[in-house]
Image (tube, rainbow, N blue to C red; front, side):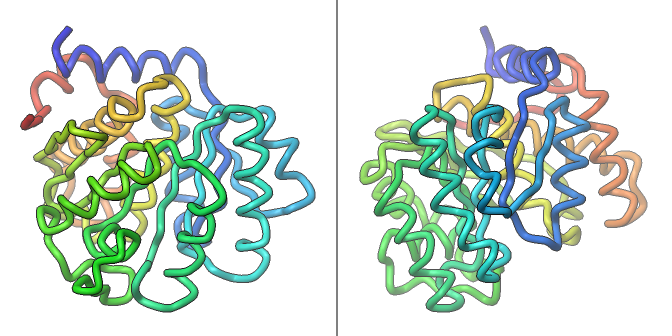
Length: 267
């Protein structure tokens, strides 16, 4: 099978199984990520209530731990959710939003990683470099000041340390697991103009993790799907606002030929 065939096979699996994806995520992007998951074919549950974490994890195919909102009630739910996921064998995708921008956003994901094993870590270059202990990295709020390729070594360090796939997002995405390294090109220059599409990519990673137990493949296929959807959306969009609307439509309508036409993977 080609890369395009493998990506679309997973998309079909998501549409057929409609896996529940539990997200503890940034309140700014809750609606965006939930709609993207629905458009792809998954079933989102957005919650940060500690009292229901174990029950929700039990019915989930994937869990998102997103540090976009670091309010106490959100933080309190993360460890219990991940603990339940560990016990149930449910894959967890960690998005260390803003790591390096504040002490809280730096120590929290590191503490979670110290207690649990992620399936995928997805972040921008500055976030990934911060988690790997690169003191030369810097974040501007939740935005990266570093280019994707500068986080190559940091991604390898994290992948080896936590036995997971690592995605460094950017104009081109870098996907690393062990000795394997893949770049995903494409997408639209309008995508950074829409808030929450990085967080959306993290949620999409969890949907693919729910149907593909190979972390490198799940992460790679999610990145390809987002890039393809971005290119498809740009063809109809007149700006960032309509790009977001057409992105949902692209995820919903994506066909095998669309993936084949737009996929850009460099190994």
